[in-house]
Amino acid sequence: DEAYRKGSSELERSWANRPRRSLAKDVAPPPYTLPLVFHVVHQNGGENISDADILRSVDYVNQAFANTDYYDQGTGTDTQLQFCLARQSPDNQATSGINRIVSPPTEVEATEEDRDLKDLQRWQPREYINVWVVREICGLGLGCGVAGYAYYPSAHGGQVDGIVVEARWLAGDEAKVSVLV
Image 1 (cartoon, one colour):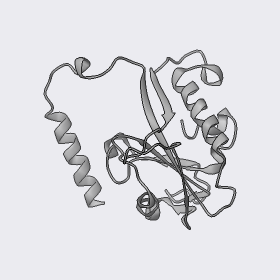
Image 2 (cartoon, one colour):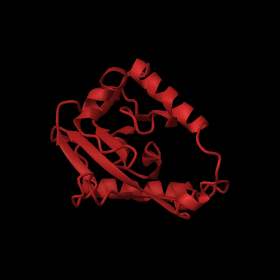
Image 3 (cartoon, rainbow, N blue to C red):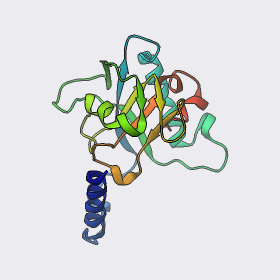
Image 4 (tube, rainbow, N blue to C red):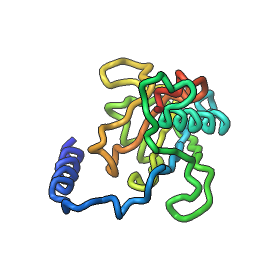
């Protein structure tokens, strides 16, 4: 995608040309809290997972990034990153951080329909971590049943930024939620 390549190149150039000063005084001390917004794309089927499943998934993500409980295998470290559901929408309205969208693309062809899915609803990707929840993901040269995917960090802030995950991987235990992690 030419637009993606151009955006990535511009991002890399701006990073390379940034002022070489300490960023420490511009950033609050850890832990850092990052807001998540879950866009649950459904047609009133099993992909319309419960709020409780989403809340449990956020809890598991926090455990993983803190290297605690199930995720503490004795070799990791606490990243000082925490996640929460967004409490305020881009237009400054109160929100639960869970956005339910009744729409047909609950089965996504990742290589061809990614932008269509994300264009249904995207919150400012430099302010929120967008997570799209769908029934099934196909593509990426792997057929159907792809558990989830995201783009490399160079996509940050762009049209493809965010995470796409199959609902069944959020409605389960710590091992399943590792797909989101």
